[in-house]
Length: 161
Image (cartoon, rainbow, N blue to C red):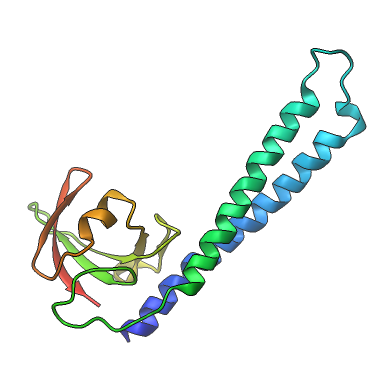
């Protein structure tokens, strides 16, 4: 079940990134068209409409490339079963519990890209976390029973799959 759940998380993150990529690509195309449209031709040497539109298009195109690279990294992620006692690493599905009075449980999966995207509903909800994020960085190399602190919150690692 763990491998299936991990695949669902990866597929969900990839689907969200794919939707974002489509929107960014459309916006970049529109911005390029705006930058080259005849209404944006400079009327004098201080007129920067076309230049500003091209800056927007360049930024959106760069974001589209970043998302495409993230999709490729997610596609290359190997889903493996976790050995008991093995440290947390890329691809781990981790159950955490806050160490405060609320003892709230949450699940995260360490992924190479797409951090912050949540997949699933209710108790099945899993948040993608990259090793560069404070929580992801704190979790790397930890094991079941370890305590971690990230972004002002303390957690105990309950389970690693």
